[in-house]
Image 1 (tube, rainbow, N blue to C red):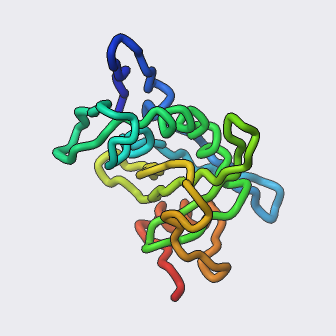
Image 2 (cartoon, rainbow, N blue to C red):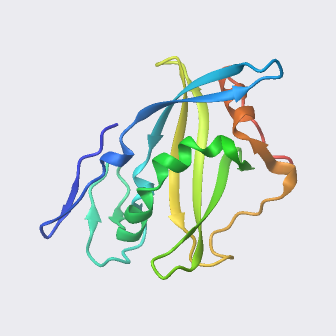
Length: 176
């Protein structure tokens, strides 16, 4: 999908950084080679919209029937997403409700540390015959307790495990 800019009272918010793109993740192998995974990366409008109207009046007419509101803070942080998603293989992800979850620590405009939550799914799309990484939602967490799913080390995996499973049409499930 290619996102059109969002305009509100003459102010234009560019969304092209969330256009679909392809990225190749290179998994190191034991024999010093690399196992490539070509992945289509896509983003939903939940990366820059919210269900509540915190910005007062920024209604977003999206592609689905649900009412969403443009959120300038989510939009601002969404500009980090392409880089963060291409670097997911460098850290751990957590399986939550059979979808993957990742937390990234960054700093806000006041130089305070904040957690930026990225919820995504990895699957094989038979129509395009390719692995897809769909970022379903991403937002800075309001507090350490806010909207934070319970995670533990039993559900910690590497991105390559998710990619390998998707390539064969399988899923990595949460360990309870």
